[in-house]
Amino acid sequence: MNILTIIKNIEKVIVATLIILLAIFVLLTNADVVFNIARDIIQSTSFLVEANNLTSIFSSLLIVIIGLELPETTKANLKDDVFHVELVVLVAIIALKRKVIFWDFNPYTISEMITLWVMLISPAIVYFLIRKTDIKHNQNHTKKSSLRRT
Image (cartoon, rainbow, N blue to C red; front, side, top):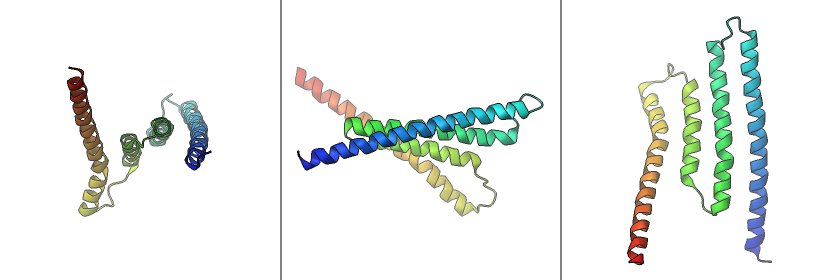
């Protein structure tokens, strides 16, 4: 048996274990979100979730979304045997969105705010450039394959 085959099999076992653990995490987090929403509705006198509880609910929902994206990213990398940077950037954007929702921007100076803005906009720019490059690559590939057919 080839050493590369052994390493590849070990990688598959590790990835499968990670996917199972992430699935358990997402199920537990989802159950926690449902439990917290139900508890808030039951405890509320107006049958609505109070505003101060909404932030924790939204945070939990975004964690579930991130938890759903991570196994997809891992499976895509394993299936295609290629690292999908686009998927990783999307997960990073979701994680940053979660942080932005709960940040208190009052204690920051202007220069710190500019730094935060750059940190937030950078993944969006990277995603745009990846998509743009991907579209150009697909168009060039389509043109070359149509030229070969004629």
